[in-house]
Image (cartoon, rainbow, N blue to C red):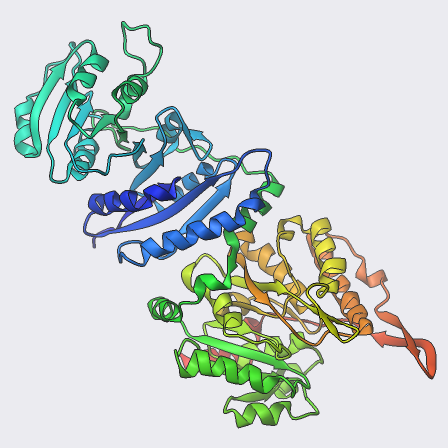
Length: 599
């Protein structure tokens, strides 16, 4: 079986994206795949998170190019860091790259915080560094090599650059060795129209031959200064600055004149704050990036996945019909992006369920699902947990049914990162949340529990997750293979528990977040927000206990005194508020039997 050839293109200047891609396509063998990576290097005094918008615009541009070529992998990435090339090295290792194509300003500049010398010494695959501009214009190419170590790669790159032009081969010979028969090389490579051999004054010879050529391809072995000269600069640097031509450097991973190459060193882990900022810049998306539903439909078919929307509800008759109609029309009737929409109700006493049934979607009462096997508890988390049993999709999207400004972006915005990026397992929505004050809608002010409880606790005890804008948002999506392995809290703590457990088990990079713009809904009464905070605090404490091996909850009070202030009543009420932790759905025998039956 043929092994797929992997080529990684690292872009530092979007203006050169098209010519870099064109060169990569020419370098790619028939059985090959190209990965596009944008590199944003942030100044040390700035926060990495400030590059989020720039990263988004780069992603749009990379996706635009990737869509045009089937041999370009559809998961493009933009890496943001103070030294982002360290993460390129991680990708090369993880994906077992065969060839790295890097764009650089000059041989003396750095790429993603790393010098060209360091790139050559630390990259365990064939490497090509494009220095300068103009190499993509028509013209002839000068190929300068010391000999065997980079011969095959150098010739291949020169051929692709020359395209319809010719190649001049300049051989910097070693007087201690027998000169090769360059005529054999010319016969093997018809594009080589002329050969030159030099033993001394190598830089001068290259400069003289470079006249009337558009670019110079040189072996990486020219990185040292030439002997018997006092310039102090490497041959490559002298040639680049004195010729005014772009210089393309090549280094074969397996040097052809000897049997070893430098080992791949381990990278140093970045400080926590930088890792969070980088995650924020790279894993924060906008729903508008995924508004091409036909593209998502094609990706869905390519991934071979099915998609379910589960709508939790409790007395939402006022809004549930509009939510269902909007999503069903756009995402099932018109595009078939979604395979099923189901309502997971919690014993509504209004017309929520009849309205949903009249619109032709399956409805379930969560208190009636798996009751004989696992019983039932009150709470939204219980409904979400049991929705895993009644839905069929490989990807599950949960959206609240109290949204008054529902739009298909609430779904496709969450689906986009999962369909485009197989590395992502879970996507949280975030949005501006207007709030009703004295009957008027204010632009900001919603998400009070988020800002006063959830995010401060994340920053205190889980700073890796401090870049999550709205950890308690009710709009999120994930892969079934991941969700079925996680416990669910039965009540208000479900979102917190899922987020902490996902991070603990699958890591920060498996989580993404998407800007869904604006979400308008019925704001909760303050007493309900107090109950929610009480439950969320208990979930945090439970997970802190697991993480640090301490016991706190067994000493904590799980009843809450609620202050009731009404015209005819001023008193304290007691509420028992404690989320039940449900086990992973994959461990439930009935769920296992259902999966066996479906297979």
